[in-house]
Amino acid sequence: MLLASGTAFAAPVLEDSIAQRAAACIACHNIDGKRGADGYYPRIAGKPAGYLANQLINFREGRRAYPQMIYMVDNLSDAYLHELAGYFSALEVPYPPPQALAVPASVAARGQLLVQHGDAAKNIPACIACHGSALTGVSPAIPGLLGLPRDYLAAQFGAWRNGTRHAAAPDCMHKIATQLSTDDIGAVAAWLSAQPVPAGAKPATSLPAAMPLTCGSVPQ
Image (cartoon, rainbow, N blue to C red; front, side):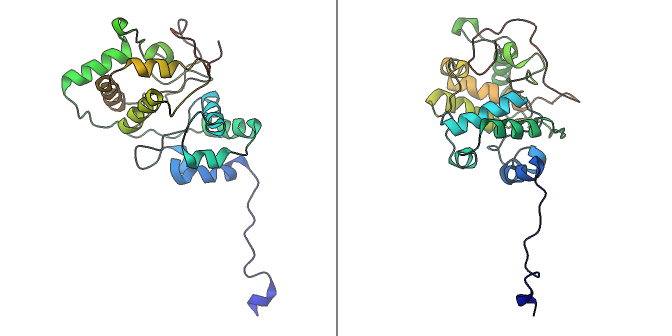
């Protein structure tokens, strides 16, 4: 009988590769890490490897609070997390089209101003000063800001403001988020999510000038 043969119900043999191990990530982040169907599972494909590794370590160390992610990485070593980050960083997956700009022109203009020039009166630096002039990030540790849903961007600013998301000290994004008003956060998130991603976009290799803030997650 098939039941007695010991072969009919044998478990399939899976290759032991980082690609196979990363399959657990696609349940939320979608195939090839191109982002989940809703606004709360971001794209991880093509992000700088150092940034991805930092976020995985932050979840493991409790600096970011999301139970599912903490469970996934709780017992993984730094070396393993860096290997996983390198795998997703090397993926080249097309970006989705930008979201429609669903805010008044004045709100969009405020968002663009903050992204490109900041607000000196509030001691808020421009986003491009750290995330690159094309907003595609800077290797090894600064992420791009394009191709992310509006809800996700706004939620991350909120997490930095209320202390549920942290980075290595000094936590520059916490400082910036607490200086932004709720309206400014909405404006920045709306404008960024409506921008197309340049063809062949990749993280820059350097910034043209020193960063305006010292960030503990970014090698100086």
